[in-house]
Length: 173
Image (cartoon, rainbow, N blue to C red; front, side, top):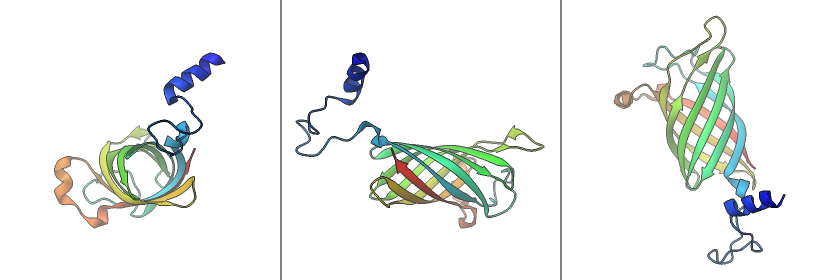
């Protein structure tokens, strides 16, 4: 037991009544405040350039789970979204920068088609831009727009009709 406590203290730093010498009166953050979990939904568009993306129709909704690791001002985001109409699982990983409620980032998204196909489709790049709203001390909501593209050279072919939209609710652990 003492070895576990020593390891936690070495990793998180010593506890000195909520303050350390360089914090000037601010309370020390808990170690687990960096972790967020949540759920949400994403509306997939029928993309004009990505014809092989296995989404059945424009505006199809996918429902998913979210994990974020915050290391201010950036965060890593892992999402798994399932679109039941197309039987598609869409995992994604993003690196997001956040400042004063505005979020922007870049990442990758893949598509796994269930049913008769049972195979991975291509992985694509995606950029996201959105807003974070703090509802309570531990609960927040995010609204985001996603632009999915196959190559960085395709950014000049941007069309607002190709955007995906998402809403996410998350809890800080």
